[in-house]
Amino acid sequence: MNSLNRRLFAGLAFAGLALAATGAHAQNAADYPNKVVTIVVPFPAGGTTDLTARQIAAALTKSLGQTFIVENKPGANGNIGSAQVARATPDGYTLLMSGVGSNAVNHGLYSNMPYDSKKDFAHVTLATTGPNVLIVNPDFPAKNLKELVDLVKANPGKYNYASAGNGASGHMAMELLKTMTGMKIDHVPYKGGAPALQDVMAGVVPMMFTNQDLAFAQAKAGKVRIIGVADLQRNPAMPDAPTIAEQGYPGFSAVSWNAISAPAGTPKPIVDKLQKNIKDALHAPELKDKLLANGFVPQGTSPEDFTKFVSDEVDKWTKVAKDAGAKID
Image 1 (cartoon, one colour):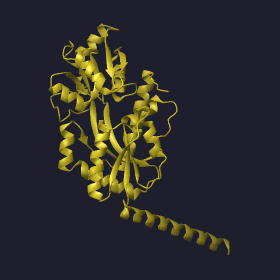
Image 2 (cartoon, one colour):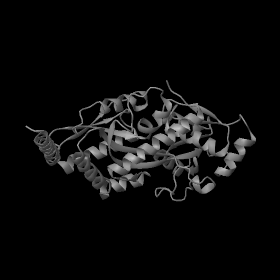
Image 3 (cartoon, rainbow, N blue to C red):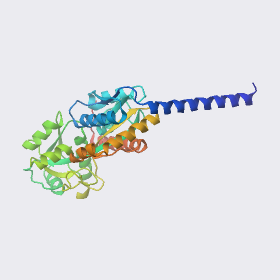
Image 4 (cartoon, helix red, strand yellow):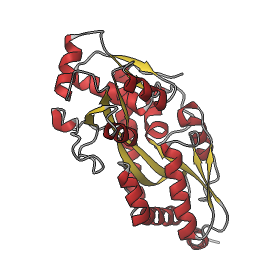
């Protein structure tokens, strides 16, 4: 076989393999799913991430006609479960409930991450967003953000703030606010958001950033006061609560988010099929209304848009952690 014929044969063979692979992926997508799909939640059962995952699993079970189950794999701020999915077979049958902590903030906190959120996942879609909210005890003298910043600056060392723990989204939100305002205020980490919130309501610690669902519920009950919402727009669940951005700090955003990701290499047709079904579920009235009532904004972004979003979030929170000197090793 002369060189021209060899090149022609090789080209035809490669084209045949490519067509076969494309056909296989298309067939995979057409048949997918044909067995149980596991959504790994890298946090304990009962939290916001877990609840959102179970709502999505129930919706996908209904729309795709195959069982989607949730498996909790907590540990190391979400690193253990996330690493498990990063190493899983990329066939669409092991998914990750990804989020701001495990897939963005952790990259700035841990020196040796067991996965790279920019490279080790096929990011399917951003599911929901919900802002952190700065709350204070009702007896705290500041009524708005300017008063709070002025008070803290005028009394260095007097005030502190609570968080759900080192590296929690509320911790990082306050560190970001400190860099923008010049406040010097000490961090009191708790082992979870519930005990931190209890101490803010009791006046043991005067303030904290917490998830909007907890903040809005306690504010409506008169147990805390909202100083500012950490999003660029007001939240429809509490439209009277001002944003931090509109109180003199344009661009301030510290949003918690939940999403679905898969191992890198998961066939694109499967990723696209999942994205479409998740988006449809999130915007169906029965789920959308529940989410909005608790301050969560349904999303359903394209895989491409979500991939860029993750990259931007990793860069943003890595810088915040570095500037704050926050580390977990």
